Length: 583
Image 1 (tube, rainbow, N blue to C red):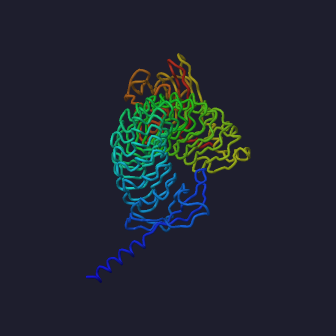
Image 2 (tube, helix red, strand yellow; image 1 turned 120 degrees about the vertical axis):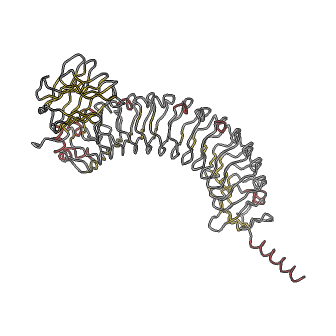
Image 3 (cartoon, helix red, strand yellow; image 1 turned 30 degrees about the vertical axis):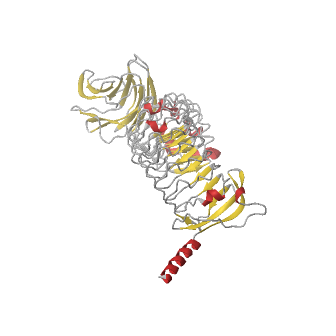
């Protein structure tokens, strides 16, 4: 029996001896302040909490009372808990970094002796829960990083003493919910990170008292499917919101009814399909809006109204097939627009006419066929232009000659040219020669203006059809005729607010379809009208199938198109579906 007892005592003593805490002491500047620092080595894999000393050799005249920062040595350290001796030995510590220690639990008194603690990081451990009074004595805490643990919720009173807290990071925890009042005393919180949690929805009461919050990150909550109308209503100081990479399907303009000072909104990588009218009208200070990588097909013409300070607009990787000029109006500071990887068939005349400070424009991988100078305003500030992968077949020479300050110009995988340029404006004349075919092809395009109340004006129509871009506030008519006069027999295609019709001999409707956002008054509309083997077909943009068609029994060749806008001015741009072979 005595031998067995000695063996147990020996094993116990050996275990205690193998678990130790030591410091390499040094002077270090952290966050701009000089600290006498304990670079801590802790070997405590079984969670021992009865340590009696912290080993190490001090600078002359100094001891543990002078230590103000503790940083773990991750190469040689591991502990499943935080021994209470640390805060009792270092009562004046203000900075603690316990990252990557394999922590699994923390006792209620772990930080009780660290009453001057200002900065605490528990990043990338395995902590699944906290005692409710863990931070009760840490009233000076300003920065708290709990990212990368195993928390699923928090005690309601865990932050009851943290009135000074400015930054709280709870990212990468499988948190599904919070008690309603968990953040109620964080009146001075500036930054709240809830990135990559497991939240299925938000609760308005979580953010009720966060009047001074500037930054909120909710991105990568991939189960987040709903956000209440008033979720952010009390965040009256909010400047940056990350609501990206969630499962949100609908944009709600009421989220931002009280967000008058928000400057940066990131909603990329969701499942949004539409952006409604005046979506952000209550947030006039916005500088950055990012709706990239969604499923957006429809954006209201006035979705971005009242954003006079907007500098960056990202709409890349969606399913946008129509650009509205109004998106870019009254935005004198707009510098970057990204529309890459959409289905845009054309840049309507006047689209960027007011974007005179544009520096970066991305239109990579769309379906654009023609670049018209009149789609743009001042081009002197443009530095980067990406038109790769569009199939562009004609370019206005006037456009190229105004790119005097353009540096990066990407024009690969297009129909009339295939190149990329660095310092395009620096060798303008030689670089323009690379576009000789594009410039020649542009000669087959035409621009026309029709006045209210006037008759048809005629332009050449090339077989097998034409792309037609039209902007008019009211009904427009297109006549197909063998002569440059109105002559029977003939067809008219009539675009009105209610219907789109094909009319024979000026009186007989031979085909009628409802206008379901196909023709939008006062917007850039683009259609493809073809005539082949007695069939006249009308397509929306570059769609594969026509939305209206008519087969003529007594076919006559079509050589001209008549253009007419009876009750308002109309602006037209036309280009052949195929460049004539004579070219």
